[in-house]
Length: 190
Image (cartoon, rainbow, N blue to C red; front, side):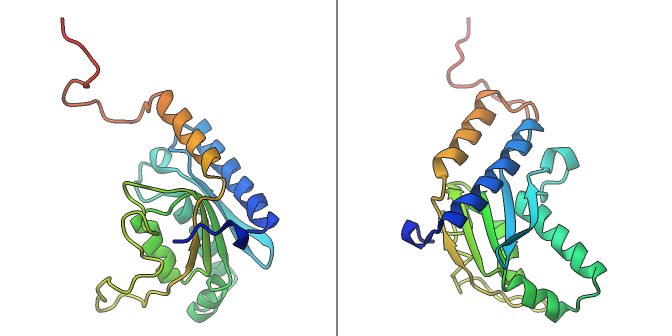
């Protein structure tokens, strides 16, 4: 992971703003506020936001939502696996939070070209915070699993805006979070 802002164009910030808008939609739906857009040839071709609560499916992260849109469209268009791989190799993902280990690995298997993200993901980050799945060759190869491809990854783009959305989400309280099994540290007992 790199955070070299000189590598970022004004387009990068414009696309990240669109990802922030997707994250705001997630927040409005009481989802963890992560959003993304996928760009090819200077055009947004897919967008996604977290839908884990709405779908009751823990894998429905913003990145998976956006890639599924593309996979479905390209399937309808009759593209072969090699044509899909070729198209993904030209795509750039802009996401408000560092992809988690699951999403970073999936993006590697899909062969995405580049990823730009907002804030780091200190608990589950797959692009440098916990693992470096965008560049590491330390992951074992499993028989029958598609070859992974490495991709350029730049973090810290509009990070303060992304963190602000997370703060809003957690300050309002997560109505979907499980009830704690033990008393919270700041609670007093009478």
